[in-house]
Amino acid sequence: MDKFGIVLALLGAALAALCAGLGSARGVGLAGEAGAGVVTEDPAKFGKVLILQLLPGTQGIYGLLIAFITLSQIGVLGGSSDISLAKGLLYLAACLPMAIVGYGSAIAQAKASVASMGLLAKRPEAFGKAMIFPAMVETYAILALLISMLALNGVAGITI
Image (cartoon, rainbow, N blue to C red):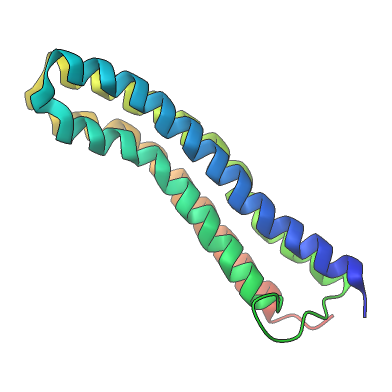
């Protein structure tokens, strides 16, 4: 049994959860700081500001999902954890899109959310338009989630 394969696969799962989670924590924090300023001026905008603040948090959820799928497939959550070195590298590679794009897109989405809060503060009737800016960034987080999921499913079917 090759122990290094499982270590690489675990590293991939950890990176997906950690990087996406760190990006989301930073993003939600940045958006929360801006949101507090908007709500200070107009407490009635709390609900809309909260939605904009929560958007950068989705990447952390996606990273956790990729980590959970990986842990399930490699036998850490039950079953055999006999993973070859090559397969461990494949699992690591499959997790990297979510890890890297998750971190970067959460921060980029936070910046778009902050800008949208500025729009909301001055023009509350433009909330629908303000939502579009951070939602566009979400597209890339979803694409990273999709490619990591497809890659994990592909790796699971390979026998090395």
